[in-house]
Length: 281
Image (cartoon, rainbow, N blue to C red):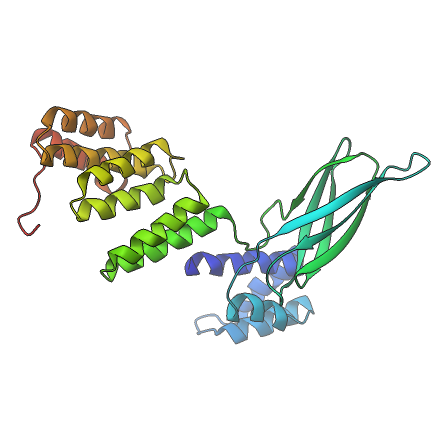
């Protein structure tokens, strides 16, 4: 999450200052700090010099601050007289009081699609858009220029928190985080896989099987969850003395042709001999 946020800050800076100033900023930073260290404050100075904009608020919000907005919008559409089209009046709403950022809004109509850049300030920002065709759909930040809270992001954050709690030995807390991920996306294969993994470590095999089955029925993201779910199911069947069922699962893992972290290699290993729990377990 932190690593990817860094990339998103550059992406959002490009949206904030424009392509020309953004590329000039990158070139300026490279030329001024070749073979030397550069602090965030140094980069801010370069960006402000090249863009001729005051960017303290931008970096305070995205580098020094935390949180990402959840965008919603409400609007009403009115027909204009004399065949002049339609006027849409509404509000872009989000939950961060100090938020300030230009946000793209796309209005899809019966005819031409209209795109507007709205300066969103605070929790409620009004907008007015006139179109010739009747508006059918309004999208906020359709090209993902702004870091925002989405169900996918909520899932990833909750899973990462769960993995950190597992590393700390807090299995109860980890399970709660994985359940939060499923609440955000009930079809998350990764969340179900992590639950199965945790329950497997606790030797709660029936519940673990249920979770791995859910992973296989889920959204299939990331792709490696399919192969590794079959491998985990095979191990459970081996542990519980069901070798034929275990072999079937290992074969299904091989058939995915997904060797992420050696999945296919491991499946072939357990096809040759039954899986057994390590002695320390």
